[in-house]
Image (cartoon, rainbow, N blue to C red; front, side, top):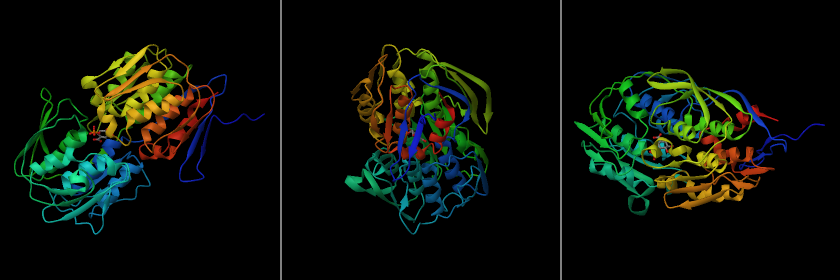
Length: 450
Ligand code: S3P
């Protein structure tokens, strides 16, 4: 008798339905896997490659929808970027300040990073005019966080709803340096201002309340920009006027994608996975610390530095998880992993509390509301607060029909919950995973063993 597949994907319409049916005897997750390139680093490699002089070679680029949006925007402004059909991409840069005025609207798709970082560059292209839009989700995400500091630098930006939402129009100007005290710990805000600062005649400083991911700082320095960093005050200063030169960037695997397997192998009994080539930049490893606190069995092997970014292989084995409290400075270091951490919490003994995470409400979806609702459908005891979640763990989950709300991280987090739920789950609009992890279902099928 041929047993029914554990994982099946129905792609008959634009909305994919992922079915996950763990056998009644349970399954285990085993094998050695690689995850796609880091999304944040991929965006930055494409952007810096486009504004640097000479050739940039990117190895390990994420071939997801989000970096494709970045590539198409910069192609429309004159950068010569080789086809994104291989993880090795070559960019002939067009030099800082020489972006061409595009003949059409720039479309950032679902990608907040594309829109917000790019705005810093567009605002400083003197004499050129740009219009920028995005998909339904991105057109509802707040833009004042970047528009306001850019306006302080002299930028001219207009948008819907009193300059708060895309579509946006930008008339490039010569910008002034500023010292900006950001009210939120956001790498998108910080990076936008640093990129705008590149084109000013002076020093631009961004101070944030807690340290956010520092990939821009690392890569800008590698491309030849002059930066000073004060870790005590979470401040970065960029000196305008530098000449950027094309580089080779080797993109590590995305720890935010590895997070799904770290949680999956922790909660599914008798699992043992080796995840190779994962970026372990300390501004991103909050997930490892949170899972360690919860009693997960994760070991770092073969730690190394690859083109300025720390990388390691991660070995994860199943373990009995216990609840934890997550709040304060660790939040920006695991912000994208909170949906899957909520899944881990549902299977952990005790009550997990996640606080200071109101930013999740303005991601690709309102992740606090959507996780509470969708995980709730599987029987999780999860309560939503203004700035976080409380999850009473240790109760078994039941397979259910759930929906991604078109958010990639929600689609994948619910899939992980389904692996350890009783009975079949169907995840609607599972195609969202392709934003950051186009091969997610393939890897899921590969590691599931009954
Ligand atoms: C990102 C920064 C984070 C993160 C996003 C990617 C980046 O957003 O959630 O997925 O590449 O700079 P915020 O800067 O809004 O916190």
